[in-house]
Amino acid sequence: MRADQEIGPLLNSSDPDLSAFAARGGKLILFQGWADAAITPFGTIQYYRDIQRKMGDKGAQQFVRLFMAPGMMHCSGGPGPNNFDAVAAVDQWRQNKEAPESLLAAKYADSAAAALTGAPQGEPLVTRPLCAYPRVAHWTGKGSSDKAENYVCLAAHHIGDYCIRSFLGGCLDRVDAYLRILRLLVG
Image 1 (cartoon, rainbow, N blue to C red):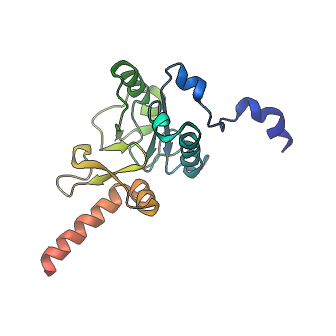
Image 2: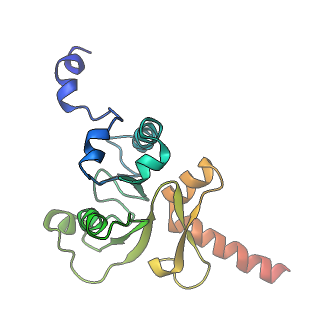
């Protein structure tokens, strides 16, 4: 409690009033890994919603986007696709005046080296779009569930669907595929 009172105002980033930042033309990409054990993903979603409430939904859409990464731990690593270039996305947003609706994420065999050097080695094992919240990547049912081009960003039907699809990623897509095959076989 005392530490929060003394250094909290310097370190905490919980104020949703980003009007000065937005007025200067700032663009913000928030991202969070669903497998982050250090900071709860739900806190980041709540902060994003707080920004929307404070700035208005349309106002917030002009300068901030949230991307949730399935299987990503704290900032990188984990079993999911966790290598993506948010800085390039902000740069493109500023230059082209068009907000990103998805980011291409990849999972490499040596994720630790990629995270430390910023230069992944070899071909990615998995690629997946990270969709701007509250949309979530849905596998089309065609092609490999390990390839981003076989996904579309769609609105989640409800928060449970959003959490499950984002968190489990390709695992749920494979279950969907097996169920479709089973339905065809059984009739």
